Length: 190
Image 1 (cartoon, helix red, strand yellow):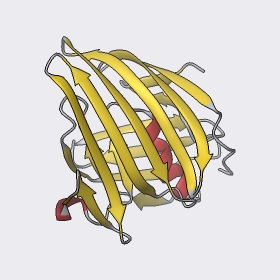
Image 2 (tube, one colour; image 1 turned 90 degrees about the vertical axis):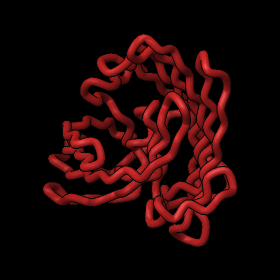
Image 3 (tube, helix red, strand yellow; image 1 turned 45 degrees about the horizontal axis):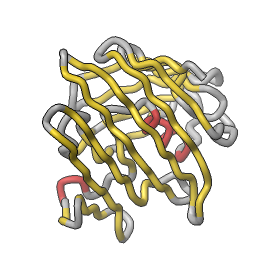
Image 4 (cartoon, rainbow, N blue to C red; image 1 turned 135 degrees about the vertical axis):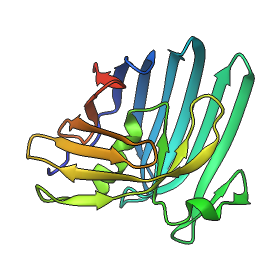
């Protein structure tokens, strides 16, 4: 797909599974790209907001994710770190159940689906399995997410599947590898 650099700011309207809005501010820091953003939404009648700061290395592998959530239940914070290659800690506690994951995937965000697309220059028709450390929107709990991406064409279309949630859809990306359309989740606005 030959991806361009991320724009300094982007935004999405979330609709379908939830109603809300997400913003992203992308930059480059020592070591690789940095993604900082925020999603505020209402899902099943419950309002929540999730802010995130994700640092990756130059290969687009997650190094650290700091996530803050707000809801009527109060504020929560969690920090995920990938250490020594493929081992993870969540709030300083070793989490062998997510070892082997290279990405963090935030339930609240359309942005984190850019990580595997940037890292894997897939030929058309090729599928890659990319398990991720998945962070829930409402309570910031973390679990393993099994998922695959299959590049469909040169126009930014990928087939996405998650066996964890028995979910499949077609994702559309722009030239920077950011989601343009994530069916029942989000649509890019700027």
